[in-house]
Image (tube, rainbow, N blue to C red; front, side):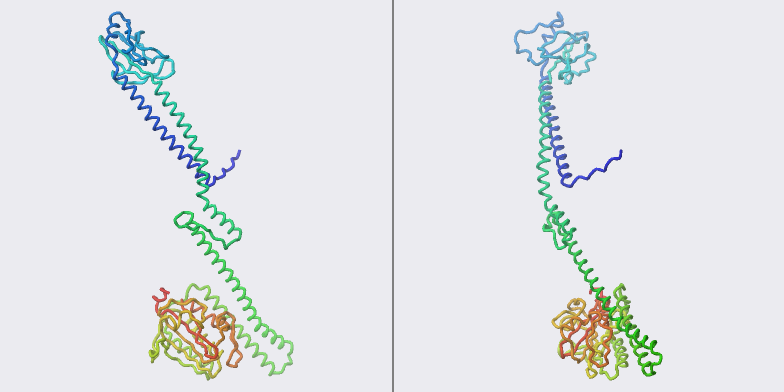
Length: 510
């Protein structure tokens, strides 16, 4: 027959059982020790009485003369509870004895040779009727005679028996008391743990905002509650982050689908037009082909930007090598000027936050990072400035170093950034792209780093880009443990700023 597995006992039951077993065991051990000590003390008292008593010499003389005892008339010679047995000179147990029998006698051998007693040393022998035991001691008399003095152990046995029953009764009472009172005490002591259990069950049911109320660090349950609250906070943060990431991903996919649908629809429409009208004039055919190429190029740039963003989101970290930001920015300005002729783009040293301490000459500014990615950030910032400012606007590119604070790298009113502020006082390498355009409203500034967000172009060419340039710049800066930020006001232009740790040591501290 298959045995069912035993159901595990609860913690409260185990604690009560353990306390009951320990308390009962302690009482039993103490009572057993007391019982042993009492019996030993009572037995020592009997032994002391035995060793102090010697059989009367007259008894030996009477036995030697006529082998019978003549008892004295006064009762003071022999106490009533003593019994004295004699062995004659031939070693035979004699029938005559001193003392009054109150029942059974000690079980003694018929011959003294089998007695096995050493003179003056007490020993315990059973009664001949199995009703108790006797304490006996032997004594040698004249003419090879021997006497055995005996005292009953009824008093000792009675006292130890009563104490034994009292100990058993006390053990039972203690066990019941521990079970009853211990159950109440354990229930009261585990009440905070029960509250933790109830809170955990409610949280499992979906109430994620609940927290354990008892978090006293001086108790184990309090420390457990604190650890549980910390875990719940992290879990809640992770769930919110996951939910926000899912919503962001859905919005991103919707925006990406919408952005891709526009050039795809245009390409499909013009291709169908060319296919449906083979008699189209050459001029219209050329215009259709040009529009197809333009939309295909736009879609290609959009796909490239999306691929770059996906790569930045999943790459552990950019390639690390020394990068000269001054040379990088100079090359970027050159390539941007070719694509935007007629623009006024100047390269200047970074202005200091302290008046009168502006740098007079450009100097090499080095950081650690991926040169190609940082060049992409500079190109995106310059392209954004050219696309959203009038042709008459002046664009200034500044390169230098600063310590983060009011000048850059930290949050302040009117400053926008998608990444957290850098620690104040951090030495950072900076690329600033400032323009004298119309600037941005506070609402536009809050969304300028969002993916697919596009402000209206101000240069009249109608190309608003893919809306991913600044998002890519922010992702690259964050991967380098840096920051991209914007300072702007309407009619006061825009200043985009890239801040990066100057050295590998600054990067690790950041």
